[in-house]
Image 1 (cartoon, rainbow, N blue to C red):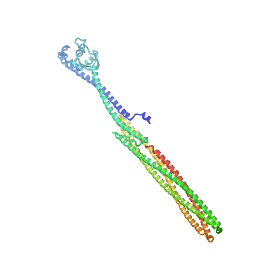
Image 2: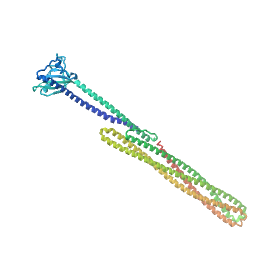
Image 3: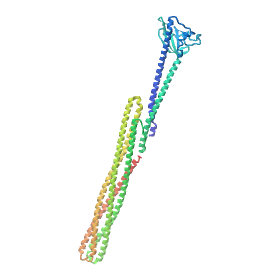
Image 4: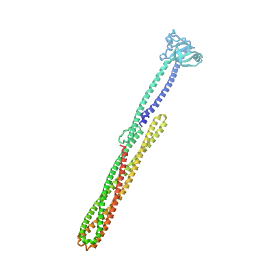
Length: 561
């Protein structure tokens, strides 16, 4: 990207080139055209001035020629006063008789009169004037000096008597022309300097605004949404771009901060669920241990009942043994009751942990839904960016159309329109990238919602199973209490054991049934606890997945700072 920036003109240079070059070319063309036209105009003015002077010579002497009063004394000031009257204006006057100079203001030191008298004009000139025409030229040599000249005929009685002449040294005419040319060149340089200065000031104002907008977008592209760049411009379109960039930065800042906070909340909730799952797994292990003890106690009761049924006929001879056995049975029942109470307490703990898991999962689901809502705000911001880019692109198109209408004068504005179009396309591409990231976050967030719902279903099933197990423990506790009451009756009536043998047999049968039922309940409880343990493992696994997803989300939004 840096290589591309270095290989292209910057905005200020482009404005200066497209502003100054056409203006300088126009001034140059106008100056050249003005100089060329001015040279021609001044030549015409010189010839007009010379024609007027030559005509005055012809008119001045024509009356004296007609009346034979012509005086041509070169030493007489009165005779030379008129012929020398325009010498201060660098205009030489000459009176020709036919082709010969008879009176002139042109000096000639070799001539005794000090004037160029007695010399002749070019035969071609005299031929044209003699025919009644006038003659002008910008390149006639007189005594080795180049002159601008004008000849007019002097007519007497219908015939050409001679010529009236007016001439100005070519050097004098060129000096005047060069003076005007220098004035035009100086004026063109001053105008060019003034307009270049104005263009430089305007280019600096416009380019500073564009550079500030570019810096703001560079900060956003690098993930920095906190640095604020002040953008001021007197151009409406650039000011609108500045407002759009500021709004984009503010909206992105709000959205990214919200997503970051939500991501952190999801990560914290995932950690809480993981901790609760580990605690539930430990509680299940303790419940399994208690159930194993309860199963062993149930098996002991079953064995005792079987032995009692077999030896009921010899009960009378073994009262002492029975008494000892009853004591042992009473102790075993107490242990069963204690184990039952411990198991019930553990089940309450599991139930409480399950309720906490449900609450945490619900909180996670709510956080994820809030994340989806925040992501929808990102989509709204993206839509806003796309709308701005579309409007900017339309503005660029309108500017290009207006520049095309303006022709050569609008080429600079066309470059501005092209740069605005590129900025619009870059904004659209950046919005598409943000939209892709938002869609990816939405997909992952939707998966998190799905996993949270699955966890919620599993925990609800777990709670139902825990409730069923709790009911079974209540039944077991009731049966253990009945066993204790029966054992106490047996102990009190050991002396009457022989008389109530049938009753004892019946009670032993009931106790055997209770033992079998207790064993069956223990097996069911063991199966339920295994299911709960598996569910807790699933919760732990899914909470770890949720934690990973939250970590990825935090990592993705950490690009913005």
